[in-house]
Length: 279
Image 1 (cartoon, rainbow, N blue to C red):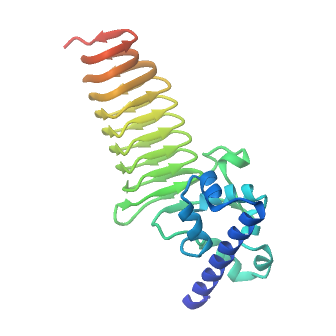
Image 2: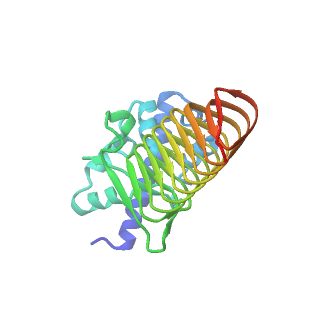
Image 3: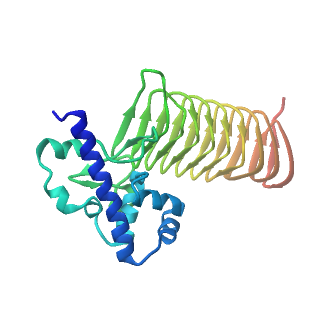
């Protein structure tokens, strides 16, 4: 087994290679730090820190950088150096990537030494599912290109290219390529490609391509591709729904687009039929 000193030395060397190659390939491509930052959606200060070993780029930026530079991810880490890595050291590097220590739990899938991505490899986001739990009953931010199943509360939000299942509360928002299910409240908003089912209240708004089912009240703007069912009330500036909006409580909004069924509605503009439930 490697000692802690050996492990630290390997990681520092890998960080140095990555920093040098980001700068080398950027200059070779004839682009400035500002241009690279703009294409990646970060600040030029972040790029400067990467090149000066003050920080390491997030795992999600590597495929984009490789595409911009016209090289492989292997080459960013120095293919010649990587070829010299054998046996146990090689596997150790595969399990400890040189990303920023930001307390984000990242679930990735590699085919050989190639990191698979939903957007680039033509695979569905539910091809793999990462199961996450915590002895403390809570975890920070969770990120994966693939589906995530969390059996505890989430305090820092979830990002997934597939489905998200949370047996607990979810704070910090949620972005998912497919469906989202939460057995507790969801705060921080969500941007989801499929259906959203939340057992508790939802705050921060929601943008979903499918159905929205909430077992509590909603606060924040709502865009829903299909139908919306809310066991509570809604307070928002704008509600846009592709199908029916069914609410057991009242609705207070500036504008509503969709067929509304509720106990009470206060709205300046409604495009669609309104049915008031009998009390």
